[in-house]
Image (cartoon, rainbow, N blue to C red; front, side):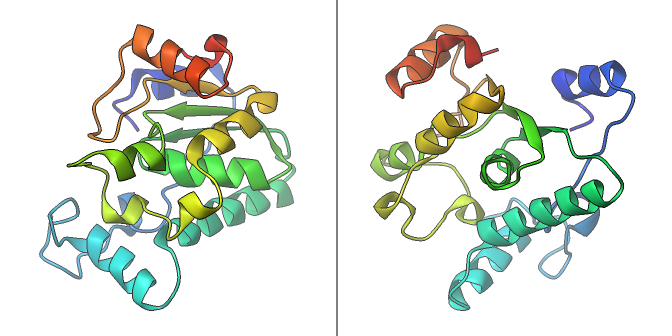
Length: 187
């Protein structure tokens, strides 16, 4: 997050700014597999996602829980009007947590995935196993979440397709309109 200009701008524009690494990233990144293998084919990120699946659970859900717990902790100190900013793979758990937590008043998603359907329909999708929600498409897709968040001041910066390639601004606007979002949500 430190390298993202949008995040740096938010930290300077706001008197109070909290950053949270959900499980498996940042300070909580495990070294239980080969050290430095987080993004590797069978690195720690994959390992913990696979363990969650073997337990009949979801790594995404665990990460949503982490974000919700952080929002509850912040509320215990009086921070009850939150602008939630989530980046990349964290945009999935951030968007889901924002949908569930009443204190989230505004949402900015930087490099979120366009949809699980796009991932399912792309021959060589590049999102990691840890970004997957079991049976998600039987119930909803990410554009459904994004439409729900539109009422909370949703902003989306440079969404990523199934191959984790950024959509240029024109393509992002077309994507937003195609999924039923006002083009003004695209930064």
